[in-house]
Amino acid sequence: MSVQVTVNGSATELADGATVATLVAGRSGGHDRVAVALNGDVVPRSRWTATPLSPGDRLEVLAPTAGG
Image 1 (cartoon, one colour):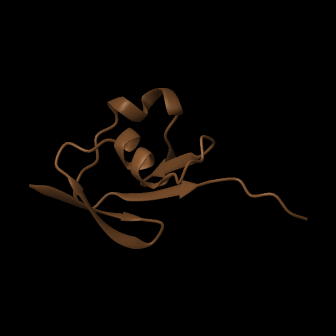
Image 2 (cartoon, rainbow, N blue to C red):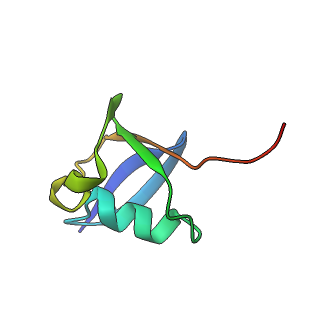
């Protein structure tokens, strides 16, 4: 089974039982400083492993960038 969610505006399919932590691990591109919002609410890093993803969830995964 799989779970269909929207990540940064794009439809994404994840394995059933995926959590915020598994999503970030697969998408962070090596960034260890990211912020995640799930359905409009920020998810603290301490809750990532305990926050399951459900079909239809909308996530924003943001990484800081340098520049000026």
